Image (cartoon, rainbow, N blue to C red):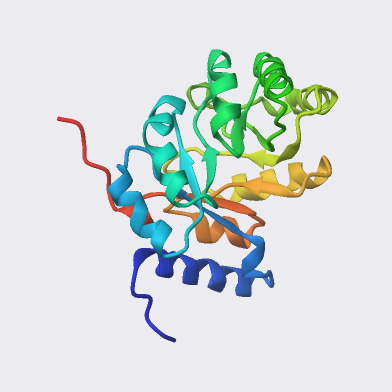
Length: 223
């Protein structure tokens, strides 16, 4: 097998290998390059190599660096993967193409209002708190049916479910659980898996993996 010559090519090869093992098509998995905290000059090399999906955590940070990048690369797709405050919903709908962190009724209302105002419906993943960790956000599993019903009634396109498993615990059971939840609710999308576990996530049904460190390297620690 030809050796990958860049981190992007290596991650793509790993996804393809995991898909082969799971008897899936590599094209069914969207690689979201997590560019949060990285400057435009670190992002552009991936754009040059053909990467088109990027993930940001904060609306304000994305507003600062993406308008110029999108002017140069209009096919770039921007994913909001961090928690979203309701008062930033309109800014998020204006800037992003996909939201991965819909997790509460108040945010459903704010996003629906923003989408109506801007006449722009963008797909949203409902984030599920699979590890019962309040600090990460996410809809409690018991509240998921009601939140999905509310989102659909508000004409928000529900792309699927998203999760962030607890750190330092084997993630596979959490990925399998999210896959089952998505199936039970008739949803196609599963946003799960990061740099340390995206291959496992792909084998267990991920349609979107959010990979940062494996593409950009370790982020500098604050002093």
